[in-house]
Image (cartoon, rainbow, N blue to C red; front, side, top):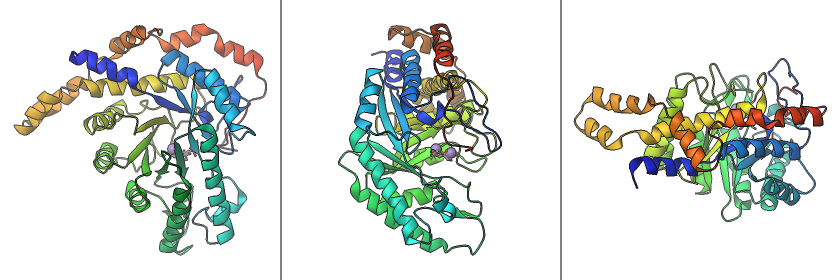
Length: 386
Ligand code: PSV
Ligand code: MN
Ligand code: MN
């Protein structure tokens, strides 16, 4: 196989999971700008996600969020997804929206609240059994706002206990993905604030516990690709939540704020052998002012472009320059790949797969946007800003 053929073959295998909540109306802290035609039910979210897959060929699974996507029959929902050409993916838990969680969920000082949170997480594993999902994604809003508010170490013990209970419930082939976030909603301590804390818990739990890197969850200036390289070396990078940020957890379209960072991350994925099914590429975005389906299509394309550039890095030339200590040449090799316009290559890959080379144009021409405005009245709010 020529090198270009290998790059194309790799690009054809890439799958980006889209989040159900990105299809619904979501908000800023101040206002939800409702859009016409947004889904009112989990099934309508799946129908929209199916459109993203239809036009990109690269978004075959959809992440659910419980309870936002609660239904009576999850197996039927999985069947509905399959009828539309997609599958149900990661199950995301929600231990942050009930009044009971004012002081935390699994780290809460009261045992009864911790029990409630763990029961929810166990229910999420039941749902995974019904949907055939591999991954349970855990993000905890737990933390404290004031020094002295609670005992930092005791909270870690409570967290470890809860995680162990859920880990023990996982079936063969199921995974627990632990997501960290520097701050927000807690502002003094966060119980899983960084990759090191997530990694330490995962290490204790066992190989089915893996870390999620949400690209919006770091301090400004953090070298995320270093974290990616480290977690891959340790065999603990389970997934990405892709989005981009200018300030904090902005949840903007991935690759919009800093496409160069996305390229650097994808290069470390390729370099570290992470371009396999074991690392899940997921989006975690909220589209508050822009049209949702085209924004998600754009995000998928942005991931594909960064990946194509990463795959095009001349690794032989790079290794030679690095070994020779040729700083400028090594940097030039990497920048050559980054500066390549990969859009024609991706258009070719799409055409060779029987897709329209222009997914956004194809979506616009499909009439789906007009159809859902006509058919759906009174959209759902995904949960944020509620
Ligand atoms: C909150 O920051 C968050 O965006 C996390 O990243 C989760 O993945 C997501 O919400 C859904 O719970
Ligand atoms: Mn996330
Ligand atoms: Mn987030």
